[in-house]
Image 1 (cartoon, one colour):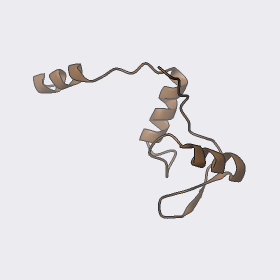
Image 2 (tube, one colour; image 1 turned 120 degrees about the vertical axis):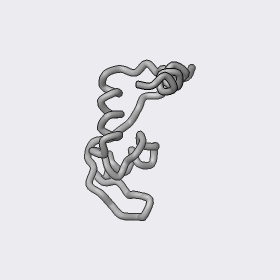
Image 3 (cartoon, helix red, strand yellow; image 1 turned 30 degrees about the horizontal axis):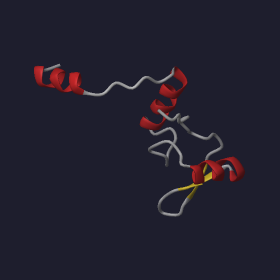
Image 4 (tube, helix red, strand yellow; image 1 turned 90 degrees about the vertical axis):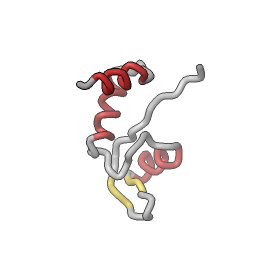
Length: 75
């Protein structure tokens, strides 16, 4: 790691997440939850729960039976 990389790393914000959520982040980052590239919104969550599929931005449907969500709390 270069000095510039270390300085940039030191300025990054740290998020505390539980191990289960870290595993979901890894799943998304590695592409295992394709076509998702983020946590689901409410519409996508309902589609997966009720239809076991998700529609991508091009309108194509993909099988997906496990919701990929992140709990949200008010700070």
